[in-house]
Image 1 (cartoon, rainbow, N blue to C red):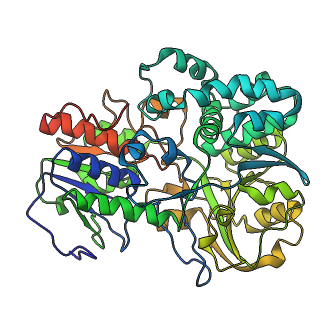
Image 2: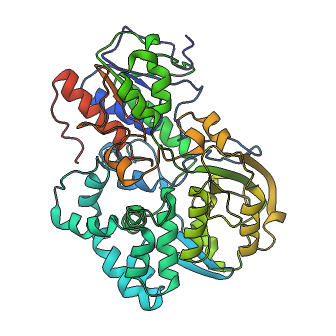
Image 3: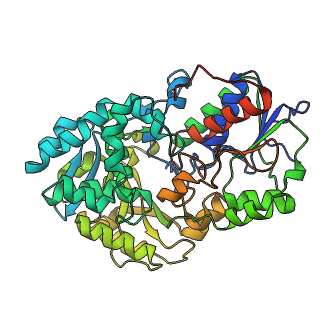
Length: 492
């Protein structure tokens, strides 16, 4: 077995982690903090999973193939316990957290300051403040509960009561109940559409609430220098604590692993089925085979010779830009994807990371990426539809493109097998699959195999750079395999 950049493989550790995405590394750090010897196996040459950077277009341009905006890292109890400053990681904030293009020259701005956001929403300003202001103030209390298994009793029931009933609604229903005018409705709907759920689905409102709350509590930052900087810092922390990270070491079967007390798998259900072979009980195997994945992503990365020439000058300062129009337009696009078709006018999420971090491109030049949702596994080419939407809001955009990198939904899975069918969220976050992710068990991180745990985004709380799936899976293993009940370093 090749061992990449860590050739000093020691004796058999107490615990093994397969996969070095943020959750796998979080699991390894949590185990090592508790004094457990741990080894991480990563099949690729570079650790990080969805938290990597690469020169996808031209020399000197740094792109993040997957995660760029690390909003949940800024509010995650796990990352806060680490202290990103201590790890040498700097979060860079754009002047404006996000913006929604309601019409070609009409942006709706989401500021980190909830009052400033409300001031730009006209008659809905007070409604936005009443809905999101208390949630943003209570974010430190709410996020440990939100970033955990569902359902679960909250430690702060009054704060949870402000969130829970509204979160269970469809985003279309909450958007129309809470707001009277289109700017606030569309802004909220665009945030909810990050879920990969149809906006008519119960629980889709939760994603709009969480992202808006996160923006107001901590912003929508990127990692200065690229997301790989954060992955490398996590690897360094594993090693500082005495653990090992072995790259270029693909694991194709649980039989490849040495016998150890605990195995934690940062893999999707599809990957677990392949690793376990016929060792899984038939009923559990059928449950994993029925696990539903969300929409795929079709993504474009661009190297640009200058800033995007937005019609609305305010958009130049927004790190994230939604291109979709009205709430009903967003809902129609996501409903089309859920029905298995490619929308003619997709909901587009665009990130211009160099607005916050100019180190990602040569002086005066920029990087940007955008993606649209497509049916899971679809090889459809959405490049023209995406660039048409950008061009409509920024005439002359195409003339700024020096190079582009294209990745369709199947290519996302080829890049990272956890992105099954191009689903970058680790599974459809329906209410049922939030409660039974990936199977209905009292402890969702356990499996029928003794000592084997799942810690990927296919376990609670789901997708995002938060490390909480890894933290909670490691806590379960510590309790069950090592008799270690608590970890006082992390709340929640």
